Length: 420
Image (cartoon, rainbow, N blue to C red; front, side, top):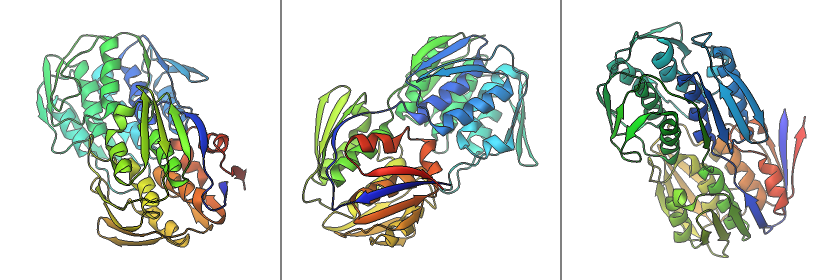
C-alpha cells in the first residue's frame, strides 16, 4: 500500500512555478474516439495518470495498438477484435463506458460492464442507454452488462433529462457515424466536451454550435485520423490555486487555461485570495492572512465544479466564520469530511450540505483517501497541519494527478511517497 507523508510546520509558504498537465477528463474520451476510425490518432499533452493506462488496457482488448512516449500518445484501431469491455476494467474506472457509443457506431455491437469508479455516489447509466436507444440501438441489461446492438444508428432529436458530461460525449461520438442529422439538447458544455468536439472535427465529423447546450451533428460515413493537443487540467490547476491560498504562498501556474477556471477564480477572490492572470496560459495565486467564509453550491459548468468541492472544503476550514458547501451533483461525496475531522476540522454534514466553521487549526494524523478528489483535499490539509500527516490508499491520487507530490515538493512542500 502506497502512502503520502507530509510534514507540516504552521503554513509553509509554497513558492515557484508549476506546469499543469493535460486534462484527465479530456484525454479519456479522446482515446475512446479512436474506435471511430481505422486511422491513427495522435494526442499530445497526455497526462501520465493511472486512468489513462487503464483506458489503454481496455482499448488493447478491443483491438487498439498504442504507443505512449513521454506525454504523447499514438493509437490506432485498424480492426475491432472484441466488442466486450470487461468487468475488471470498467468497474475500476467509470469513463470506460465511453467506448459504448463508438463501438456501436462502428462495429454495430457492444458488451460493456456496468461501470464503477470512485465511491462518490450513484452515477446511473440511463442517460447513455436512453440516448443510444433513440438512435436506434437495441439494448438489454443482463448479468451486470450493457448488451447493445445496432445495424446502423440513425439520427434523431434527443433531449437529455439532465446534464451529463459522459452521456453527452457518448452520444456525440455515436451520432458522428449515424445516418442523417442528430440534434442533442441540454448538453453538458464542460471544456472537456468542447475539446472532444474539436478532435472529432479534425477527424472529419460535422458538428455545429460547439460549446452550446444544443448540438447539431450531421453523420458521416467514416472518420479519419487526426493530431490533437489535450487541454490543460482545470481541476489540477484549481487544486494548486488552493494550495497557494492555503499556505499563503505565491505560485505561478503555467500551461493552464484561466478562462476555464472562471468560477473557481471568482470564488477564491471572494474569499480574499489574490489571483493575477498573467496571460492566456499563465496565472498567479498569492495567499492572504485573512480568508472570508462563503456559501458554495456545485453545479454543471460554468458553475462551481463538483471536482473542486473537497479541495475548497479544506480552504474554508481556514476562513474566519461559517461556510456552507452544497453538493448537488453526486450523493455520498463527503467522505473526506470524516478524515478532516480527525485532523481537527469543525464540520457538520446535513443532507447534501457541509457546514464548515472556521478558523480551525489542523493537526497531522493518519488518514485514508477514499477517492480521487478526496485524496487531493487530504494532501492540501496535510500541507498546513501541524506535525506529520500520513495518507493511506494514496493510489487514488494517481488516477487523476500526474506526480502531484513531485510538483508540490518543487514548490517547497515537505512531502514524500512511501511503499508500505
